[in-house]
Amino acid sequence: MKIHVLVGAMAVLCGWGTLPAEEAAGHLLAKAGSLPEAGKVFSRRENSEFGEAALKLKFEFQTAKGTFSRKVASNELYEGLGDGKARRVLMSRTVETRRVIEEMEEPEPEQHDELQGLPVIVEFKEGKWHAGLEEGEANPEQKTALDELLEQLRAEPDLAIYGKEPRKPGETWKVDLKELKEFCGMSALEGEFSVQFLELKDVAGTSCAVLKSVFDLKGVAPAKKGEAPLKMAAKGEMLSHRSLKDLVDLESKLSGTLLMEGSPGGDLTFSIEGPLKSEVTVEVGKN
Image (cartoon, rainbow, N blue to C red; front, side, top):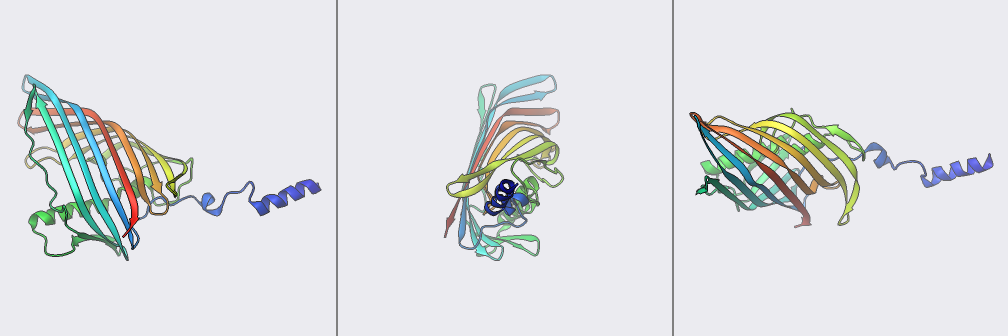
């Protein structure tokens, strides 16, 4: 009996058989209005590729086949200014699109982001997002780009995917698609999206949650003026290493397949289907 009492006392003193309070309560993975703290800089790089997808065109009784590919690379900085405010600068963004129909390549117009190189102040104040040029007045094209940036900020995809409540290693949950406004370029999402908290892992001295997402989704994407919205479907997996301190994915890799179907007008319809992969990395530094 004395031995059992002694062992029990040592267990209490040393923490045997119990979890630290933080482990027992779980880990917060996301919160509304999350921005880098004052003095910190997030350098975010993204590379995505929709490669060598099968392209099919149909007009009345005629069909044509080809391939389609698109590569997007971007680099943006977020510098924390404190009080829910940050300076955002899109350093670079390139889009390479290639479309070949019946062995003939069709030219694609170049794409340019109107905010590239311009410091933008983003702020989360009283539960709302704000964005504007740090200096000068935005022209109409820049105002449109600022509206698009605001729409992305307001969507808060990390909050929708990871949730507001603390999560524990081993836990699996389903993403509420009503809260997830956009994913893989599509909205009005339907289907399945689940996330599993695999483990805690140290990444370059930072404690990270290792998270595996599995998705099988359908939705729509906006089309050019006068065209019907594109129907889309995406299926795949995503593995992320999320900093528990900064609430940002230090590394996230996605792989899967993407299908797009639509009509430019009249009786012409098209479908594009192929592999999709994306990698996002964030380096956390000081200014």
